[in-house]
Image (tube, rainbow, N blue to C red; front, side, top):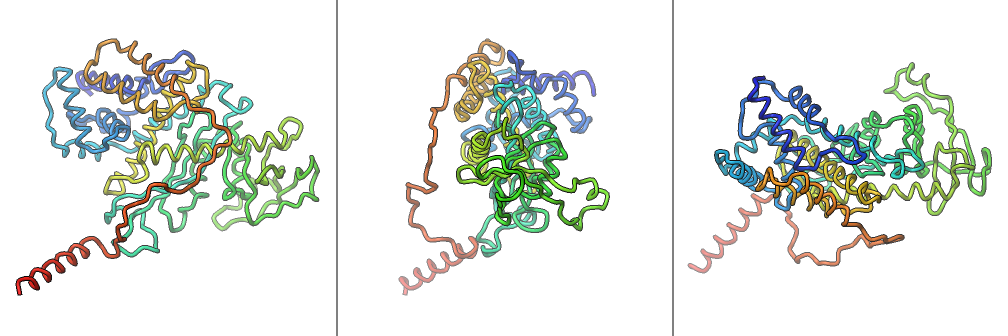
Length: 467
């Protein structure tokens, strides 16, 4: 790579880091340093890419800004790029969205994954002890679904529900995510269709074991309370807390009694699965030593067997924190509008989801810096306020790229720190809509056929009147 192109890449890196306040904090480590981003771009992007208006990092910056902004249209991203170039005294670019869309297609999805996972990893490792549960990192797993445009590519990769007729439904994808309890950053995610072999939540969870390190505590729902899942997590050096699955009965008259409806039992090793080799099966323990305790509405299964250091009430309070992942999914799907994706091919759908995850982690980083400044937990701050503050920072940098950069960034961080959420213990909300939808009938035929029927009825009515 020649000197001019490398210098332009470094300027793009500087713009990317300043737009999302990726500067060094008081105690947090530097997030996504310039050297790391440069090495990642040079290794994942073709070294001989032509110098364009939409380089790899410029395209990623606009893509992230597109999902964070109120207007998710490509025209808005192109207009922001034109505004920035005019402010910097550069030649104006076209308002045609074609070059930007082609640049998004060229953008390697591995680049987005690498930056997102590295940012989440550094944020998790830099979290102070006060943000953890007794000094230990707690990680949450769950899955959700998103829909997308009804195109042949999307239908082939993520088919619609069998209960819907062809042409009347939308493709649906399942997304499994491992999220940090302390910061809300997505440590890793996997996507699959909602039907077919190897598309269940358990399969997605297995693909995310690489993000679990010794000393972690994993919270999951009862669907994952199986011998194989717990054995794999114990082998990774983690502890688990999850409700007992529906096909098991907790007999508290057995095992070693620790208290009322609190005992330690042995779960013997199950028979070998067909997909497991004999060596892998023999490496597993012959039995798992687990604690079963009934607290509140749950019968929990955990590897935290010491009742003197971890009481039953502690387990109840710990597992109640699993609800945070439901709030995190609501943040992604409602506040960032990831519920209905917009791309029309399988490759771009995967890339769009990855950019949403990266955008979430960038906002969480700014929230973590602000939380450290005001000495509160990151989850005590407003995600929506942080998103708006980063949008204000992007507007300032676009029109005044070199004016009071450090002071502006600190002002944005302080603004995020002031936007605290109210403390509402025991809050419940009904899962129902108050605003009634318009009384329109459901579409019972594919849209082209419905259009033809409307035109046929109009033509018939016209001929009847003419007669």
